[in-house]
Length: 329
Image 1 (cartoon, rainbow, N blue to C red):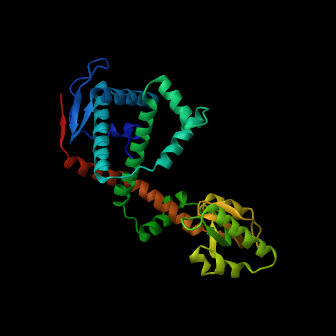
Image 2 (cartoon, rainbow, N blue to C red):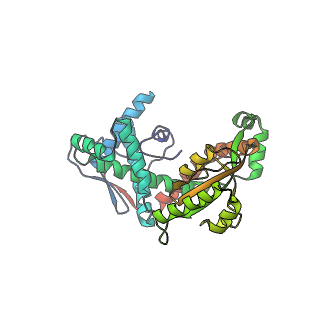
Image 3 (cartoon, rainbow, N blue to C red):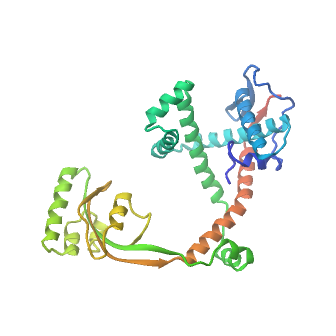
């Protein structure tokens, strides 16, 4: 749904008249670089416009859509202006990049090319063209920031009430979108004892502590009593170690993996997560019926997708109306 330079929204934009100005002449790709537009304190270079136009032209051709060079350059210019406005707003807001997420995206790109590490990807890209790796990283950072801002701005403008959801689900369209098939999800009733790793207790001490508690459990000590007395998770310790009913995706991967392989009524051997060392006990398991919530979520997602484009257009119009935009002919 988000309007990006490199997605299908480029094709849709050709028919929505999102024009800011008119580019009266095509810009030759072999002409000298220069400033095409000024967007607040950001500039758009001729080379940027040419690159964007070439990409759009290829996408339109692949989609079987005809457009003149002037239309393509106009669309590219509009998208670049929108991008500059968004990035300017991001820079002013002081948004912080999640480096872990960016590295994960880069690693997936590396693996898709048969590479095993980011250093191998950097060597390959920079070997083909100097600075390519840094440019790719910069683009991923910008796209992540724009996506986060889009979610903040657009989702905050779309308000879907419970009544709207109920009305939609009663409609023929809603019956098609939200299946009535029963949806069941597995859940585990869990308890744990934690030996936390922090400034007051290093990894070795935490491991020693959890192993000692594990030996006590094996000798017949009551799990609940040990959790209440010795667990460093003070919240669950007050509940004798209980974490309640847990479903997939709620716990860190290490915890979930052990939880899924521990039989009901049994406890695990000590294992480590980012929080420290754990002993986990699965008290019970069940299949919970979430059909009603699933149908409501499906309806809400559909209604949001239908309303989001107008909310996005309103936001971008506000962004543009408050900006200084000058196009050099």
